[in-house]
Length: 101
Image (cartoon, rainbow, N blue to C red; front, side):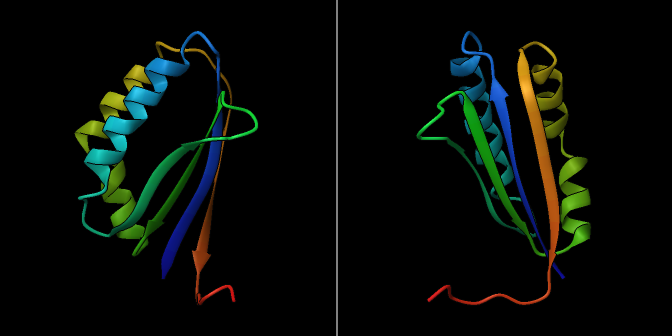
């Protein structure tokens, strides 16, 4: 069963540029992982200090393997050095999907 993760983090304005660069590297490394169908970050157009994440994984095993990657460990260490005001993510199990219109 496919998994979709949607989340966001609010970054202190002093750390925003550094965090954007870090998530760019993280996305580049992650997109080639087995089971990764989509992995992206985007700044909110109304609140640029909010960075949104969207992920689509083929299955739970792929997601668990993702969490074991060195680039994830490196990113988690980096995140300890910046000020994150808020952070949340929700995982959804997707049993079916189709075009919106």
